[in-house]
Image (cartoon, rainbow, N blue to C red; front, side):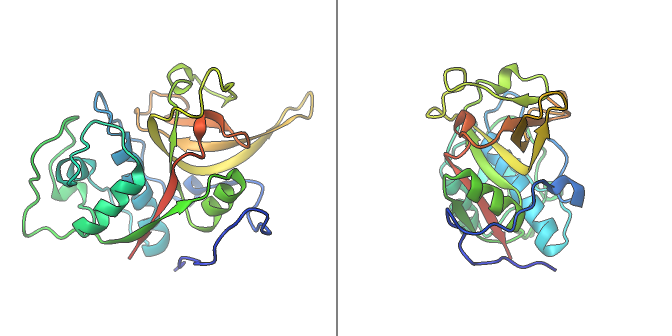
Length: 237
């Protein structure tokens, strides 16, 4: 069973990451969910991250509860955008997260915390922030697993498929407002021109009718839509 490599990844360090990598191929990415009208993207990104890391490091394939996080975290973020590092710290304080089957269904709203005393959360040991550098992010995806990330959602609202290459004017990198899950990366070579376009493989939380069955492919290497702004991942016990 894999363990977390605590060696730090820094800019300019030698890379072990292959040219392409996709955690979906390991069956350690949970199905795409739909946040609906509630802007609880932070919960879906964080929960998706923990679900993947439980699969990778503990061989546990579980569906966790976004509604539990929305109801029970002390900041009462609810349907509002918030830095995921704050949420990871709150999860550690809560003792972990509950399985979806041990809590109430997702309702697109915030309620009082309804966790029962006889339900035990799945523990999360902590989290790690990732430096705002796409080479480091690529290495961390390969070494550790999927990453939570914040982006500007302007370009997502127009996305229909393919590799999205928005300009900074179309998708300002300094105005992030949405959280997603980076589950891999790849590179496309145009058969006619030979041009190579590296991109991120991103799991969104707008249901499977969005993009490519719920996924978004964003150009990699130029901080498109602010993808480097708020990146982190969980450590599961």
